[in-house]
Amino acid sequence: MRSAKRALAAVVAVVAVAGAAGCSGGQGDGKSGDRGPVKIGAVPTPTADTDEPLPLDAYLPTKEQEESIQRAKSVLVSTCMKRFGFTYPAEPVPDPVLAMIRSGGEGALAFRSESEAAQYGYHPKPESGEGQAESGSGAATGGDRAVMELVLTGKSQDKVRPSDQDTVAGKAVPEGGCVGEADAELAEGAPAPDTGGSDDVLPEGAPEESLRTAAGNGPVNAVLALRGKAADQVTKDERFVEMIDGWKKCMKTAGYPLGSLSAAAEDPRWSESTTATQEEKNTAVADMRCRLEVNYLGIDHALDSAYQQRMIEENGEMLESVRSNTEARVKNAAALLGQG
Image (cartoon, rainbow, N blue to C red; front, side, top):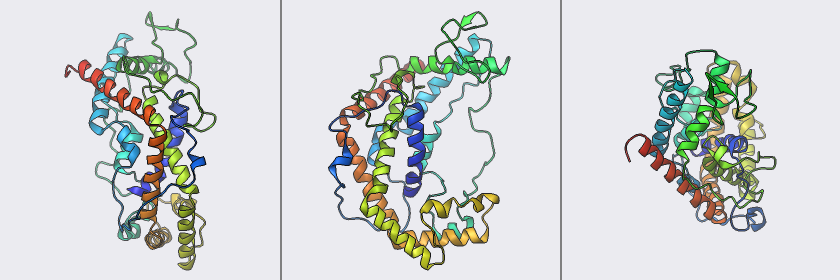
């Protein structure tokens, strides 16, 4: 869903800040805000959302690549945990952010058909198997939970690993725990993306760590940071602002004087019930009708694509190193799984 991907922008930006280590720069002038509004061609007028990829998606791992990396990682983590006396399920756990990006998401701001809005409001549609445990989400067993967390991640709620001398069962806990050890092994020989050393890719205040210590997600977070930055520029673009103003007028005429999409979709009253109330459904139907009236989907898609393309132009060298990093980790994963 296109607008669901818009809703994900804030999420991935936060993820990038929290996990993208040292990823604070780009190639080219790195100051897209100084270049003025992007040029766009003919704006489409879709009447339904799509899962069409955005330009920066080409630099994220494909589903097949991510599955290969996660399979190898799960085996490495399980083997490492066994050294310390813990049984840990060797089952891959998909990256939740990448999974949401690929699916388009099911966020509150997602566009849905009028019939779905009338049925579910802003609540998520029920899915088969809902409530079942996610594959690979089983907990480790075999001892004290705090110690298990220390071995798994290098820290726990009760004990943060203070030095390389921390030991469990007479063995030194790896830097970053078994997860860090697995990521380091998968990243062996993988080029660390050159982010140029400026402070332009990530928002101010991003942690200054090396990409190699970012739990294996530094390269991905570099792309997510650019996605978030492009999305931020879209919301400031005059064409987007004018479109949202049109949406506000439409909603007011329909009897819903609201100031933003999030004010409509994330009204606290909607969370008071596990299912949509009639008022929520009515609001959602008006919302979707007004989005179509102002061509929200078409304008959002055109601007998001254009600003992401600008990000690619300004950060091409770094993005190519991200792609090379992914390819190297996939190659290592295949070798570890006996497939390469």
